[in-house]
Image 1 (cartoon, rainbow, N blue to C red):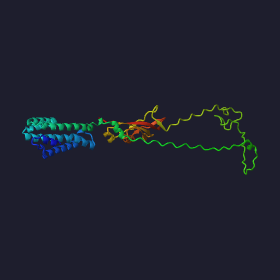
Image 2: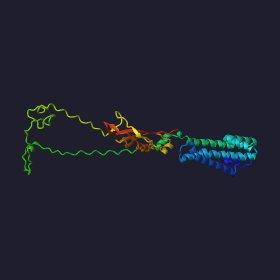
Image 3: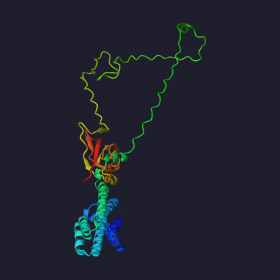
Image 4: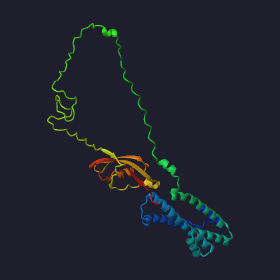
Length: 344
């Protein structure tokens, strides 16, 4: 399309750019792509993925150099054909780029009295610039993309609903036999073969103490003694010692219990997919810290699905000082927040 425009704008209706000039322009574009691809990491000083590096090399290296070389080749060939100052116009085009090229088109159209040389290429160039801006701006400024739709596509589907509870078991049926007073008063018609013998328990006269005993009493009791007394005037027996408080096996941080102190805390690696999608946030975990300070159990409370695996793998390696309760190490249940933030 651009070549056809240049042909129509030419007085001789012959293309200004021949195969050699097109080859030189394409070679400049390839050189710009390779230079940007291999030098951008050294200049910026930070690693980039191959996809991002290729896109930036195409946008910032190949396209600008190809277009600049194409304009210079056109000015060179056309100015020589029209006998203009080739060096001057190539210098103007190189310094001012698109603006210098447009000035040359207007100048050549005015000299040749053929305004098609300026109007048609300028229209196509402005159309190309407008379309390029609309396409490249969303690729460069990714923070302007709709985040709600992107997060909806990346979120995990909700879990299926729980199955309905099983029906309640029917209570056992109790069969009740009604016996009338007449049946109770009738004599049995059959003599049972075995008759159970009931032995009475002998009554012990050895003691007359209180059932269950009393504190400070004598085993077996004593006739005529005093409740709670001791034979021989030994005095009142001391009360039994209070029961020892049982140390709980697992406690939860909060209230009067201070949070465990971390002594080894490697930070998680930012997931590459989440970094490309510009996802950031907080992953909240519930952890059980063992008596020796290691992470024994981890549960996810909240967080983005792309950030959860990195947070779990990092927190599993954390170490804490043992938490003491009454001087005894105990397990602690606590909540841990892992923040993922992208630097501008």
